[in-house]
Length: 179
Image: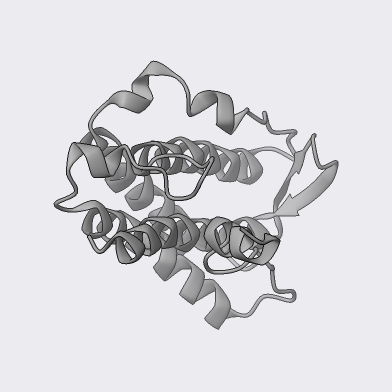
C-alpha cells in the first residue's frame, strides 16, 4: 500500500485544517456537526454484526467497536476541556494516551454503551456552545504536549472534523466491504 493509499484510509476526509479568523457561519456548521454526531454514528453502525464491529477500518487500525468507544472517550475529554477553558484562565489540560485507552477492557462492551454516552455528551456540548458569546470562543486552554494555547473556536472546528473523520472511517469500511 502506498503512503497516499494509507493516508486515504487513515484520513478519509483529509487532515484537520482550522480556519482563522472564524466566522459565525463556520461556527454554525461546526456546531451542527457536533450536535449531529450521535445520530450519524448510530446510523453508521446500525445493523453491523459482532464480526463487523470487530473489523479494523484499516490495516493496523482500530476496530469499528474501538472507534465508537474512542469517540466517546475523546469527546468526554473535549467537553471537559471546553468547560475548563470557560471557567479558568488558560488551564493546562491533561492529555491521555488514546491508543492505550483503546486496549482497555471497556472497549469490548457493546457499542450501545458509547452511543448512549454520545447522546448525553453531545446534547450538553451543543447546549454549551450555542450559549457562548463571541468573546467566549476566544477563551483557551494549553495542551502541554503541543505547547500551544488553543482557543475554543479552534477546539470547536477540531471536534467537528473529528466527528466527521471517525464516521468516515466506518462508512468507508462499510463501502469497501459491501456492508
